[in-house]
Image 1 (cartoon, helix red, strand yellow):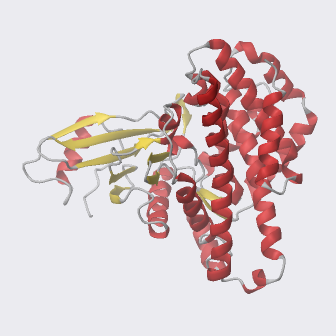
Image 2 (image 1 turned 120 degrees about the vertical axis):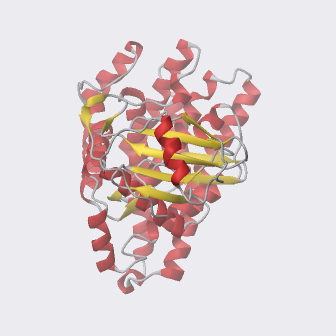
Length: 410
């Protein structure tokens, strides 16, 4: 769709969003009675939900702000991230049609994208907190990660074209956020850190653990230097819309070329964060055990589904002849697995002591249960970080999770 851009950037109001929606060819009839609500609950953007009161038509308009919404104008950010996010959505839609919202219109000058409304889905984090089961999620997200990572890597695309594409997705502002919030600030005294005073001992332990710091430094080096594939960059359960039958990935504004395991680890970490929170939500022991078993099975299945699909793409769609060398695929996948586990641990740690937490744990009503969940998540996260370089199977990971839980200080 071609729509003339406004002369200069400005943050939209709901009325601005309605006026733009009226100019778009396609979504709404001429007699549409449009209503708009700003529904963004994230840290960086405005999100407008536009509905037609005369029909069932609706769209989403997302606009990037020139600063971090969670902090304010003292934390400026480039609006280029909106262009990157839009192009990533289009690329992901090409690779995995139906698994991301369709882009209807964009305006890079206004840093906004008009896209498919997913109101018939729910944010996965919310669904998990409410105890909903998603039996197809592991298959869906395994397919999504396998295809988006394989086909944007040197394994699945022309290496020279990949280098050109890397230039389009340099994303320094968003990468800086990740580098600081995940691989730096949780391990020192930092202004943006945020945690309950009841776990000050845990925060102090993070700051003084040399073994942990070494592993985090190695993970940070990979994040800084290892441009394997085009990542979503923030693939947590708050960036995934689901129903029991459908999975839709949103918000790839942290996308850049980085280590594949960062995306895989993000999914695993957020499932484990929910797992750590469960005693705070479920009092019945039988129901709690059943839900914990389901979450750990989902962790196992996500890796298993991803690995099987990734290996199948390697067999059928490989473009790099040297990658056909006997043994190379196994070594590659083993390292990808270890990276995923290390990054999962780092993601868990930062969600407890860093700037942005997860509702799974933060909204547990009982303070004692909430503290226990925080300690459990930190125990799991640290164990995954410290052991990532020696692990070979997802079963070993689940054993480490079990041990970390049983040794968590109450």
